[in-house]
Image (tube, rainbow, N blue to C red; front, side, top):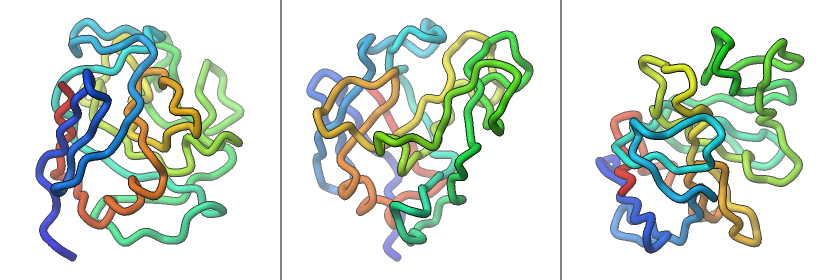
Length: 172
């Protein structure tokens, strides 16, 4: 493996992501962008800032085991992500069925076939400051996300060997 990419640049105005000398089309949040300190749960905005890649989740029925430096695991049909600010597990992975509101990560639309977990609102978690901000697969029609960064599945897959937990996503 080559040296990992240190910084991935995201130009939200142009809907472009630059990594390893290549430029990629992306989709961003339907609510546009917001400064991280102004992001709220459910606003649909992509948070501006520098975020580390904390880990990778993959659908085993859609991708092979990856070549990557990132910590990773297979997604399971019961995997979820809590989006209820009143719940102690807010912005954390959970298992379904779950007692509070939680997004299902095992989806039919392919968006979460490959998920890179970003460090936005993770350490510490602030209730209501936004949850489940991921870098994932774009929809075929390139529709806006709920606040995540999304790109073509094959292009995202090709970046995995070049990413590490030290890589930061600089969203501007």
